[in-house]
Length: 119
Image (cartoon, rainbow, N blue to C red):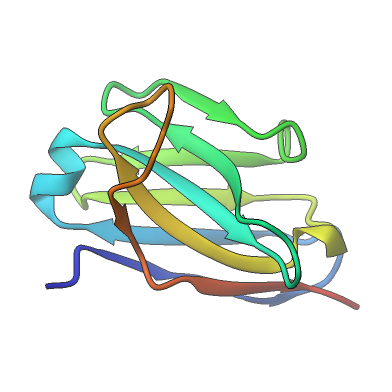
């Protein structure tokens, strides 16, 4: 049973924007905190942004001021708006869900979507 499904990845030039979307089952969306990770080739998976069930947010220092995470209650989606993209943002981006906003140890994962920033 698929719980999290990402979409919106692709190829973009440096300085451009992309919006990733993650559709969650209603049960997961209503209970859990949600977040986005990314993993670049040869690197460890990195937590990018988290949004609590109550709407609190936090971001990795590397994306602060450029990325914004949203929750849409009606659509049960969690979106990641990415602006001013840099080549170092290139990675596979994963949607996730956790029951702990502070430690954020995911219980559920999406399949990932590729983001490539290149000219």
